[in-house]
Amino acid sequence: MIRTTLTALALIAPAAALAQDGSTLRGTGDLGVVIERATGSVLVVDQSDRAALCRVEGLGDLSHASLTFSPDERYAYVFGRDGGLSKVDILACTLENRIIQAGNSIGGAISDDGRLIAVSNYEPGGVNVFDADTLAPVAEIPMGSKTVGLADVPGSRFIVATWDDGEAWLLDHSADPANPQVTRIPDVGANPYDALLTSDGRTYIVGLFGEKGLTTIDLWADPPAVRRILPDYGKNEPDLPVYKMPHLQGWTLAGATYALPAVGLHQVLWADAASGQETGRTDVAGQPVFVTARPDGRELWVNFAPPDNGKVQVIDSMTHEVKQTLEPGRGVLHMEFTPRGREVWMSARDDDRVVIYDSRTYEKLGEIEAKAPSGIFFTARAHRTGL
Image: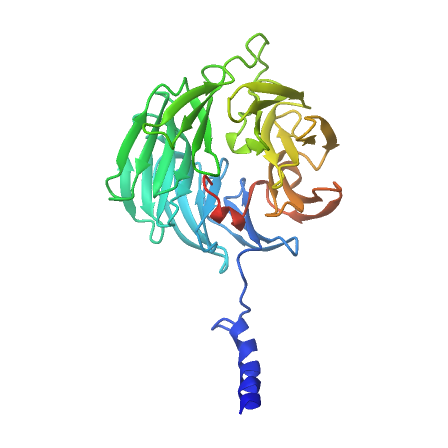
């Protein structure tokens, strides 16, 4: 009887690997999405096979696009520059829904429970919040300003900085999603241009375009505590023309030290995470855009603004010295490590390809054809705060 049952199970098991339509089932943990900025499309890719699986089109203006994933890693929510919010099923390779929610948007985030999608807008400003399932409107929070650096905060909350007013707004949707409790945090600094939230959900770091230095906000404090850091970097040095603003999502924490791209300087700055005091600088090949840590924090990979955007440099996080210079292709816009850091994928926009390197040997492992690729996003991001 036992043998008969086991035989029956063996016959049933292969069928469980097939969907109802007869297609092979696939997990999502090995997948990623590449933004194709010139064509309004995204490419779904497989990490293990280093291959493209499909292309989803019709997503509008993706010239400055980002995305986030649902908790189950199945859906990608793409935030377009034209105010478009798109929901893409990366398993079925279909555009599930798309709405135009503003005139000009700059990014978005998903709540920690996966139920709300928030979008940061330039025009008309403020933040709009939507149901993650249907993309139906949930809340509209006008702020009278362009908004930047939107991030999810634990507890069904979001935080965003206002360019015009130099504030940060903490939006708590936990009690009533349609009517969030708003905490305004003043005196953040002149013209915040980007911001990020540390992975523990505690520290919101704001980059300032209108003055030197940066601002940190301790969200564990009540009320949130504002502190300026690095107020004097570049103070006595002439600024270089800024061809592309660095992204604070490229900040990294290596041990007890922050590494960050300097605005208008060919340098990576180092700061003590506890005190906020500058501890050193590393001269690099150009104006850094992303300073991205390998997941173990042992190395930092840096890409650059034009005219040096064909180079990528690797910095030793212990010695702070440049240990490798690579030239993966023309117009390297973004880098993404596989979740455990074995490989790094880089978008070479002007070569229409994604280039894949071994992150320890610096050996080129492969490439994938893509249409003017920019952002690369792996589904492991679905489980990280602040992304």
